[in-house]
Length: 385
Ligand SMILES: [Fe+2]
Ligand SMILES: [Fe+2]
Image (cartoon, rainbow, N blue to C red; front, top):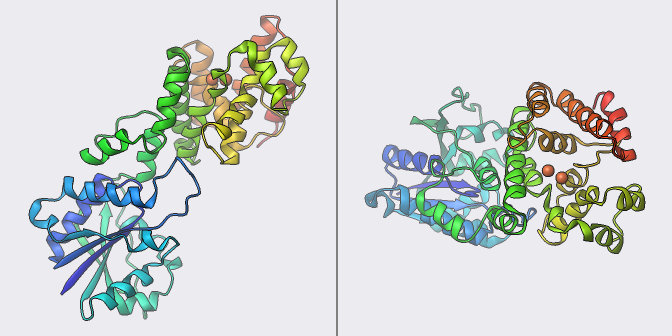
């Protein structure tokens, strides 16, 4: 008996996962198929789906994408999820080997997973337990298959599979972009119905911010993702920070000073800011709300929200990115925004410097109060990050 085993996070399962699985079944003609979603430690509540939810999503993906004849032999296996801890591939294979003595096990992976095969645990044990079938991605050149004494046997399955990724699908949920090309229909419906992958945040912000502010928010999330992808930063994190950057605007301006005092927010020159321009408090308020009301625990995201309005002398790469995306999102159609956008796409440090400069220039030209953090941000922006 031959058993095809397909592991992965499936967070969420996408069309390329299923195309690859279908091709592998047609080529390898297994008697049984086990799709085994991995346990994931719940580090990012809200941004990722629980194990039970991913089991359900994977079942829906199989139902949607595989023809009935091949679907019959497929079972979504809760083994790793139910163990509730990190499970290495050799452990899952050993479990299947014990359950089905004498069966031939073939483990299916995408070619992108080959890159870090060197770090997989117990390659010798893997070689004893299974062989590997590898699906190639469309846009990437075919990688070299690992070869050597003690390593498992690897072969490619025919065909090339679209360059979809679960990370990108999650990012698209946060930026409200179309997902129909990436996710199977039933998966998408389930994600929407249960507001997974940050869609709950998206819906709440749509209700709590006015339509104009919400449109700006979505524009900033998209701009942040574009800049992150361009400059090799974490696009999912950037989209989340962008989506929440103005959530402090849920609090009416007249109540911002009170909020900042009550929560003892550490806004530089807090009282002076409250007197001069209380609206500037919205970034620190937003960071506080993102943590308390929207369940964000990622300190980098919270910092980027906090620093997006005033800037500071110490801005992380994500802080700078969100500050810049806020100044040049697509809804900002004045000429300076276009200049910042162009500069930021070419060079993030340059775009950020331009964003700080234009903001300060505008404040000075209109004769308004300049927050001292603005001057500190400018001086720091002059030196390389
Ligand atoms: Fe803002
Ligand atoms: Fe904004």
